[in-house]
Length: 131
Image (cartoon, rainbow, N blue to C red; front, side, top):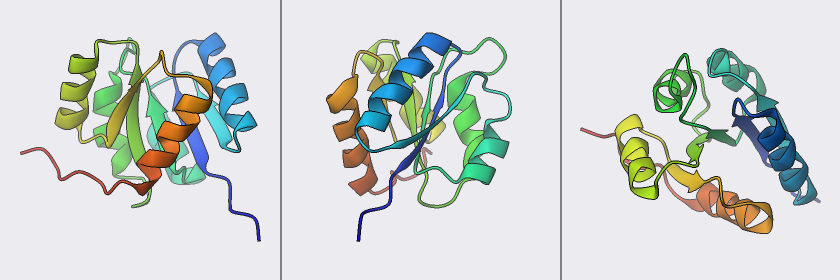
């Protein structure tokens, strides 16, 4: 029996990046959904039940790290929220801890390496909430 495809929701306001990530992850066996706004992510998470939410942190209306807090309320326990940004790695690490995200990945990570990192996140337990 074939393993079920992991579902990834990628949230970014750059349509070219969304297209690149969708094509790339699809070629590595992921089912990829995309969304161009921080608004509406909670509804998408609830409706699509993704395994992963890759979310940029730099949106004009609502920052991605804030979206994590909101969307997690509507997500299944298995959903991993991962900040996905071109921001400095130390900033991403701090934002991930502060927001309750399960981790972070730099946008410089693409292709097979991105697919492998997502697979690794699937195995990691969720970090405890920030205090």
